Image (cartoon, rainbow, N blue to C red; front, side, top):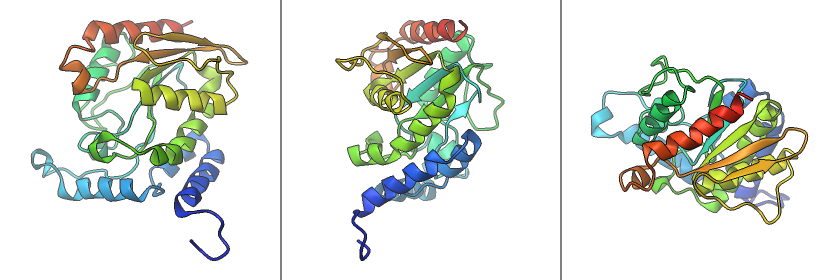
Length: 252
């Protein structure tokens, strides 16, 4: 701890992230996210993965940095995931791009009319989203896909600022898994959206109507991880039902 500094290093990092996020427009936010180094464990891991690479991607250049939100710049639907995959977005530089979860998600988005194509392989593959934007609760790839509570807290100002900027146009927020649900509720509360009491619990296909100056609907969906899709806990029809409902709400 620096002389005269009352905050421990993690708290100083979180405070710095919060100040940077609070001042940013959407474009500035994307740029600032891409250079964040607030969480030492995540920085070490994302850079190690980018350096060592998976054998099947040995000839590719890895992004190896935090991942900004991506999609329609004026969305009516926000989709909140957990964190970049080590050899997915941490490789390609675009959220949900280049891994099995992304393959599942983009195919579903295409089926319900929110994406122009069903596949996602790299950042320049021509994929576009209509009315939808993707973000992650944690912007760096974590070891074992498990960010710590402190890392989640440190990263929270990024999604909180993003939600504040997008909120006037949003009609639906789709939360992929419990961590996405918690991050979305926290970000919406930070933006001044009244959250019901008791606090809504995550569940697949759960819908919560949120009132306030910018009313919207919160939707729960199991995360399209292989743990869920390979076991049948999450099926294509289940995913399509939630995203189709979001598309319906987004068009109102």
